Image (cartoon, rainbow, N blue to C red):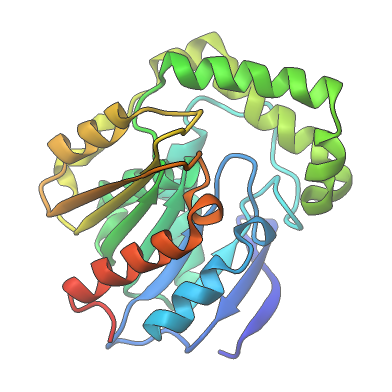
Length: 264
């Protein structure tokens, strides 16, 4: 497999993807990037390329349905939408690319999807998790900030800025994320029961000014998983650690992977 971008059909939906570095190998894991609730391939910027280059690992970066250049998602979302992404869609994506060994790099919703996948029967091929501002339960801070995001979407140029990444589907992308997180039934969402089944090494990175979650998320993960778990809190850093503190994020990820002999 050569480096490049394209689309692949998964469950009848065309998903955009970016492949970086060498093809899947039995001797080295592939980095698999799972974006945030308003993210996509392009919103990772050059972080996947940097991490792939620094580690020598191949990398798959794809946009879930409803994001970026992928086909629209079925809306409204159900409260278990991240379970479906983790247990149904992601295994098919890994199979389609022939990935038998993977390190999941998940940001926010992508971190939650990574945890559900690794803690399920389908997660046997996962060698490590890199979680950037993950969620395992709903906090008041999250709800408050997501409500504020809705106000900003209606009163600022946020739609135009997000449309650079999501195109004409930007309204569906935004409200598909915002509506489910603010739904009354979603307040009970909790994935801590997946944690005791996770034995792969875990790295957690979060900003001290994260507007969508507190350090309680990391504490819950650290207490729940059975494998080795490390965490770093970055100063002067918000929800997107790879954008606010790119050098520190890259260095922490490389140290973590090398410490478990997952890259050269």
